[in-house]
Image (cartoon, rainbow, N blue to C red; front, top):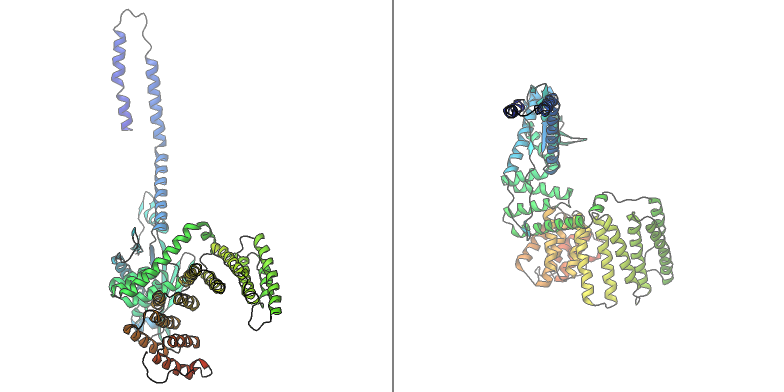
Length: 592
C-alpha cells in the first residue's frame, strides 16, 4: 500500500496548479468543470487499492500454491530423468538370545546397513569412467555417474511455519524426487550358523536376500554381505562403480557379469566390464567387450529409431487366438522331410504342409497383429522348401519358399524385435537358403551376402541370450565357414569373459582358435593356450557333443595331442561312441 499511496499523492500538486490557472482568468463567465474527472480518477484509484487489499491474501496463497506445484513438478521431473534413491533403514529384528550372544542390537544392525550404503555411494560418486573406447565420431559412449543414494538425517521433531509443516513438504518433495527404499532385516540362527537377511520395499514390490549360513562370520559381516547382495540386484551399476573405484576388479566383474545375464540388451554391463579388464591392462579382452557393447547399443538405437511405437507395444508377443494356432500347428507337427521317406510319403507330407500354410496365411491376413501366425507359417514354409528340395533337386521353387519363410519371419521380428529366438530362427532359415543356392550354382557374391547375414542374425540372437549355447555355436561355425577365423575367436572370447564358468563357451573358444589356425597357420602362443585351456576344460566333465566338437576341430588340424586327450576322456565316459575310436591319439603327442 505504500507504493500505491505515493502514486496518489503525486497527482495532488498537478491538480492544484490547474485550479489556480483557471481562477486567474477574470473574463471567464463560469468556472471550468475540472473537478469531475479528478473525482473519477480518485474513485478509480481508491477502488483499485481496495481491491488489491482484499485480494492480497488470496493472491499470495495462489502464488504459494503455484510455487509449491512447480517445485513438486520439478522434483518429479528430476526423479524420472536423474534417478536417485531415498533410503529409510529400520532397526533389524534380532532375538534377545542372538543379541546377547553376539552383542549386537537392531539399531546397530541398521547403522551397519547405512554405513555400507554410504560407503558404496561415496566410492561410486568418486569413480569417473574414462573415455576408454571411442564408439563413433561424436565421442565416447557416455557412462551415467549420477546413480546416487541419499540417506536423510532423521529428526525427532517437526518444523512448522505458520501452521504448515516443513517436514511434511520435504517428505512430499522427496516422494516425487527420489525412489523410496525402506530397508529392514533380521539376523537368524540356523543349525549351520547365523544367517543375515535383508528386506527391501520399493513402492508396490518387496524383495529379500539371505546370506548362506556361516558359523565363522560375525553378524556385522553377514549384514554387509546381505546389503551388497541387495545392491547387486537392485543397483548393480552403483555397486560395480564402487568396486572399480577401489580397484576390486574381480568383485566388479562378478557384478557386471550378473547384470549382463539379467539385462542382456543393455550396453552398460559389457562396457563397464571392458573398463574392468582395461584397468588390468588386458587390452584384447577389453577391446572385445567394448565392441560387444557398441553392437548392442547400435542395435537398440536402430530398433528404437526405426520402430518406436512397435517397440513400446512389444512387451509381450500378442496371441489373440492360441486355439486356432495350436490346431493348425499340431496338424503339421509330425510332418518333416526325412532321408528314409519315400517320394510318395514326402509328397503327402508336402500336401499337408501346404494346407496348413494356407490356413495360417488366411489367419494372418484376418489378424495382422498376431505374430504367432507369421512365425508358424515361416516354419512350415521352411519344411515345405526342404521337402521340395529333396523331391525336385533342380527346381528353384524351394529357394523361393525359403525366402518367403524369411520374409514372414521378418514381419514377426518387426513386432517383437527383442525376441532373440526369432533372430536365431532366421539365421537357420538363411543357412538352409545358402545350401539350396549352392546346389543351384548361384553366383558366389549373392551366397556370400546371405552367409554374412546369417552370421549377423546368430550374433544378434547371442547378444539377446548370451547364456544360450545354440546361437554361440551357430555364430562361431558360420564365421569359420566364411573363413573369418579371427572374428570367430573374438566372438567366442567375449562369451568366455561374460561367462567364465560356461563349458559351452570354453569349448567354442578352443574350436574357434583351432579354426583360426587352420587359416593362418601355426602360432606357438595360441597352441599353448589351446593346450592349457583343453586340460582345464576336460577336468570339468564336458558334454558328449562338446567332446565331439573338439575332436572334429583337432582332427582337421591334425593336433595329435589334443586328439589323444579327447579320445581318452571320450572312451572313459562314452565308451559306446565310435567317434573316439578312429585310430587317432597314438604316437607322438605333438602338433604336426
